[in-house]
Image (cartoon, rainbow, N blue to C red):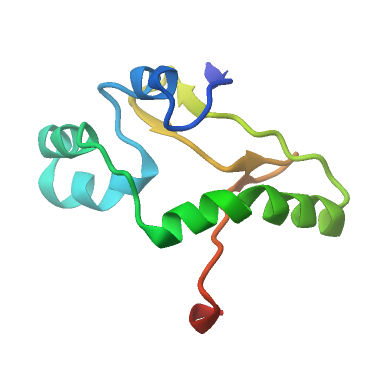
Length: 111
């Protein structure tokens, strides 16, 4: 059973909902170092940098543009879990009818 948790990303509720599970950002650590090390890494707080803050600021505009281009409405879940994989979660920036969306707002030099 898939559960969509309607919580704001990085909120205390979001942090609680993802306790003891691994997200997509930690996939490389999971594959190279195993579950225990990945769960340890997952508990450290990441406040981001200029670029992550910029991305959070531009994300709503990017999703609005996506909706216009693809003529769809994007849901904004905080966290998704699946009872079949109780040690995993994902926090997409959005979901349209077909895809999980991960918005990236690169600096001009990376475009």
